[in-house]
Length: 446
Image (cartoon, rainbow, N blue to C red; front, side, top):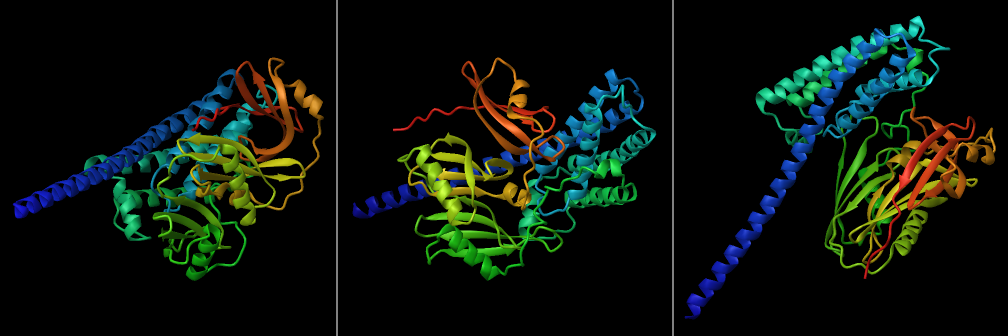
């Protein structure tokens, strides 16, 4: 009888373990399928957008009137933004595609700057038409190369998850059709972008694609571990595994995988090789029931930033997802908010600890800066805002405009009915640079 009972318990245990293993395997498969679907969507949308981009640039070459040309150029600008977004969603983080992204940025900047000016008073010059012709020819080459990659993806039923796996196994993978295809695109773009260097394309370039411009000496693997321990206040028993990104990248990172026994969690972290700056952190620990509110969590975030020498930061946005608070902090200098220098944090609402951190925007934008004086008064800027808005807050701020340039603005926060808006007015020209509807969060917790 006892023997039969023991066998029964063992059988139940085996069934339970098998079911747990099955559900875990199923969950991982579902995540992989979702990731693959997202990669496929981004790639095929990119291919379609490059087809349209080539056609739309061709259309502008046949246009002369402002009523047709300006909307067409705005459409070109919109397509380049979408294409850059889809390139960024592909698993190519270790493959340098900065020349391709730069080429798309150049098209977007040129088309936007041209579209917003008065083309009746200042029509396109012969040089600008020549630039459009170059962009048309070069976009055809990119279109052709991406089409080749797409054909191979369809014909060989290739998976983008294999690109992820290739990079996981080898920092410089070879004989991967997708990776080799994008390397060809990058080489071709580099060739004609260098040969066709044009001041009308490069005068306004601002490089925010990577962190190659951060300052400081290169750090070692052991130094990266020490930085992680101090930054995250790790227990001495924490186990840390460190890998360095590919040798040819301008902005190399140490990628750390940390097992923290104290919280029974895995923490993933990137630190720049140059200067040893923490770039992002994800803590996978299980978060329990909420015990603190968003306000206390935001204060904890500020203390974390101060402790890690992110000085003069101010909270600008907060939101809550289940038991996690998400906060954005920006630098405040001489009373002016520097929005490009932003840090995003996730803070657990069970104990107020940091479970997510990203400083890439901050590191890409940080510099010692002299803030200029505005050319118009705050009253003049306020007059350009709709009288339907009730202004609640006003301040000066530096933001990035559509050309990726930093501009000094007056920032206004106003309400209309139950809606709240954030408006940025250029402090030199009085032009409305940006308007954004804000989500006002109502806290709901026990």
